[in-house]
Image 1 (tube, one colour):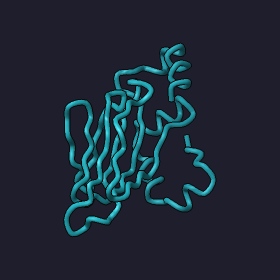
Image 2 (spheres, helix red, strand yellow):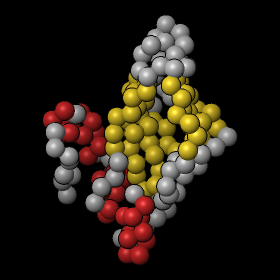
Image 3 (cartoon, helix red, strand yellow):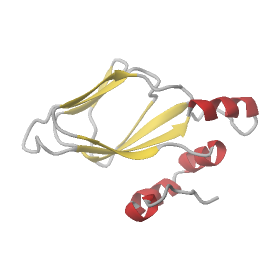
Image 4 (tube, one colour):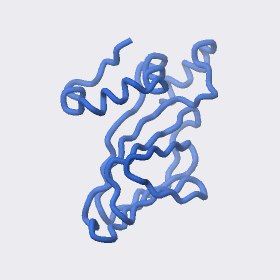
Length: 140
């Protein structure tokens, strides 16, 4: 089944949408729930996103690091993570997490850019549990 992208998204981000369409965990989430989040997250230097928790532990969040200058960190629960360009980080955003871009080094003013993708937790079976599916549609 083809994904119905919001108006203009596919033409503005052809490589990103093509990549997303090849991720079965993302496309099956869209098929089952009607939509799942995927967006470009851009963070300017000297920025801190305060500790917060996602609305449900029924999903996982993936970050594909596109541009990561020195001084950028993600904390999930008690784990401090540094993005590496080209790598994917997977985490449960129901755990408390926060982000820093301290802007250090020669690229101190460069933005941190990640492709953020939500998928449902692989331990869930939405196909055979319609009640769970209804609850997740509300949570997502």
